[in-house]
Image (cartoon, rainbow, N blue to C red):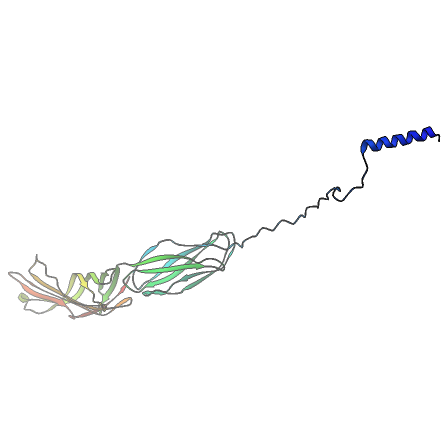
Length: 284
């Protein structure tokens, strides 16, 4: 290589250094920053709350008028209004004074979503005052649902017969049990005696005997001597009624009736025969 060629190469190298500056080794600060890859975590599973069964309990009538001493049927409807099956479904009836229950717990088993069942509660009102019947529906894992039925006593009709003979007797007991109304004896065996006929008694049928109202004592007994005189007639009419009310029947009762009539021509007397006739009656 000639001297001139070598000089040209060196000159080119010097010009390159002058143009771009000195070349330095890369430092740590100058090194490109490494970007850490993002850590991807799996999406958190949604927290699912367990669906609890929900019940609804209803009755057709929130108030029922019952005859005291008689069994009544109360229909209770239980419906599953949730989207999960209700298990161990039961209907419970609370105790209450004055009420008698056939069963306090009725087991209905399982109840599918949207399904419903009807339970029949048998109850008897034993008093002449209103009572509340509390009915609840329960299931495993479900809240207790409750409804109330108002039980109100109503007037009752009683029917029976005179003994012996079997002639009918009927009356109505007020809802509060404190009075008997329209005690009616359509026919009763008796005797009548007229002074113009020598006063000899003869058999007769006494008809349409009605006692408007009688008070019942607090112990459930009636002992009344009633004046049934009719102002339109010059007659002295009296009736006596004795009876003890127990449970669903009237026991130990007796009935008697007498009338004395007089007019300008005749006078006479009629009375039941035997004078005190036993009778019984039961609620209808």
